[in-house]
Image (tube, rainbow, N blue to C red):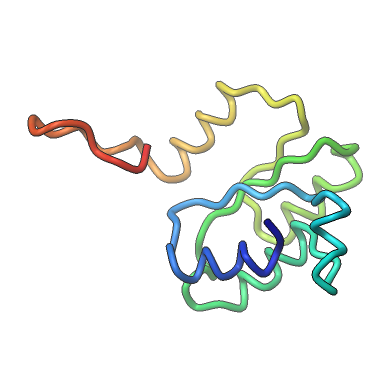
Length: 112
């Protein structure tokens, strides 16, 4: 929904990986008083003990050359420009957090 919701969700859920877009739609990014973007969210996350070490992948539809270096220098593990190569994204996810756990005989697991 917006940046503050994203930060709150990360604090509550403690994900293994975060995928962030750089830009947010104007009605969301400017409606809450703070013009959130992926860089501001990452800055906030790096200040939280719960998320300081959580890997982040950036995705954007904007000119990648403009944002790639900034995202990687802020600690992102990868940067993708839309349209993204889904196989490459999955490869980076698996390299970053590993393969999903095997399903037990009792049935499928949740979360993937």
